[in-house]
Length: 151
Image (cartoon, rainbow, N blue to C red; front, side, top):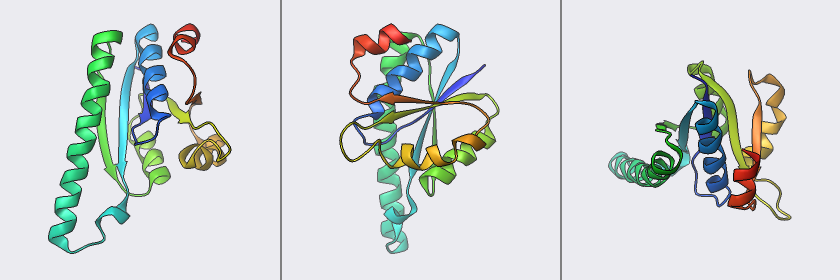
């Protein structure tokens, strides 16, 4: 089965990327893999404090995932899978792509405004030619209706 890989983070544009991935997966009999990456700099504390912070990050990720997963199951009939990795964002995205041959499309949300599309989109665009499949960049301010129309 072809999977749509989408990155879960705290950005506003992440929501539209999730919606797009779920709608495309539903219409193409694909799957959705949600990747959340915990940056290493969150745990540069004493060992015990770092472990507590790591567990809190994982709990927060699972809570966010469950919100998206419920919507995907209820509205789109897609049962997403969650992958949590620790490390630098772009290298971990590449590592996940290499580890799962079923991933067929990377879906990213792009921020609107003068600051640009966001750090993940900006960094991945530089290496897009080396990926084994296409990247879909979804505008963060696109309406639900427009998303439904294009998927």
